[in-house]
Length: 71
Image 1 (cartoon, rainbow, N blue to C red):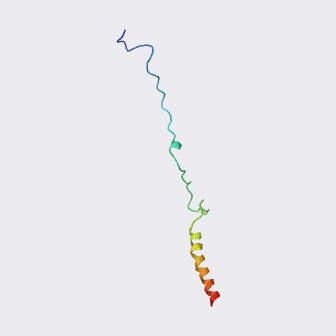
Image 2: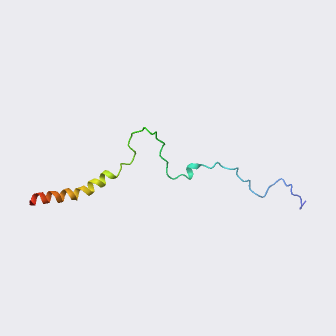
Image 3: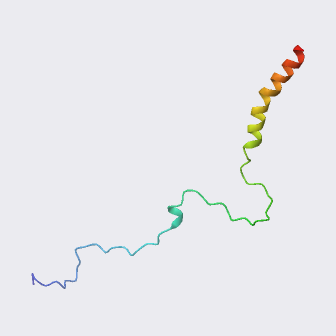
């Protein structure tokens, strides 16, 4: 019958079932683990302020040494 919708052969391919969505697919960077308040370990990255003090102090000390040699 041409108008019968209950045919045994389907013309459409079967759709696959829903797949699980993985959060790791969307996460680009990892978050640091929480640390307790009394954890005195250094963080992974070294702080930049000691280097900044050395960079600022080096020309000052050099100028002081040059002036000390001139006097």
